[in-house]
Image (tube, rainbow, N blue to C red):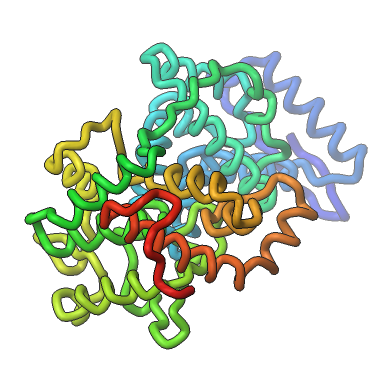
Length: 367
């Protein structure tokens, strides 16, 4: 098709017969004439469509997901966290990995999630749906998608029943556990980690990945970096006399390296998720009795039952996030002094239980 645009003679190919039928050629010619009528060059219109198609083919769900994961890695997310996210996304790639993210629909995402649900993995399906939403929001702010279609999936999945981690909530039983840990004849580093867990009650992953540089012994504070916390913000843990003594015992063993609790296979890696729970099993405590994570429930329950401490101080020490924005802003900036006193009292209380003293009249050290 010959035409003039801005005074220049041009030729637009409509294709060769029989690859392009006469009807299709006429359709292309009509579209070209409409473009000219709108003041557009048909050749440039075609080039723009080719560029758009090429860009769309390169902006697949997998490509965007890989880009998002790369940014998380740069931001310092824990390797274990990234590994879990990649594992989750691998469940989706066979069905939607090569699809342009802008073209994906809620039913397509639901089809992926159903393949997970039918295997009874309801929690995994819900986590994958949440990850879909995060990736779509990233695609939106980077100009590769118009909306988060994962939002339409709310309520479409089976809600998993909450699984409460086993924890010892009775003081006398807790004293027995503390004595068993103190008598543990396994690896000294694992024994120290088990001793620290009830006194500090961090998330087990935060403790096993703890680095020596995070501890300020003069200020008696352990600062957990945001990249290692569940709520993605730094968390401070007051160190008591007891925990400082544990660190002093540990320093000659691992103080020359990066981690407090390095793997026996490589000092460049911390102990694994299963190490602490496996040690509890060797001590004779079943998974239905106590888990490494369960020490958090133990501390929360007993500290609240004492009636001595503000609930916000306990929640803040557990690094829980408040759903109320005003309450969260208040809690973030207060309660430090109370938390320091509370942690001293708690360590003294645990010492009393371990010694077999009376539950509420333990021989506490001066706070």
